[in-house]
Image (cartoon, rainbow, N blue to C red; front, top):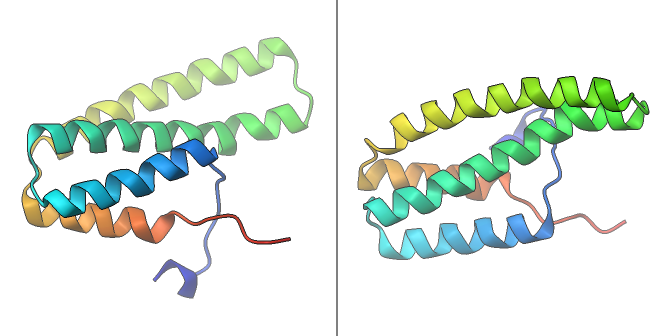
Length: 118
């Protein structure tokens, strides 16, 4: 669905991509929104969010060769955003049922892509 719309892209480390795909496959196979699944999903979403926040907010400053002080200030702001995101994600996921888990896994599969050949 995203490929039919304009969209933005954020790179993630290969390790995170591999872990995300493995987690989606594992949780889909189990099909249960139990505590273990919720914990795995929570950690994955937070790590993906952290990578995206770094790319969209810190990477432009790195490319502009911003001072260490500017980078530190930006990182404090990003840290606050991530902390707020963690609270929201945790509240949403703790109420997750099996059907909602499947929907989130579908979404994750939709947004994770391997690098394109140059």
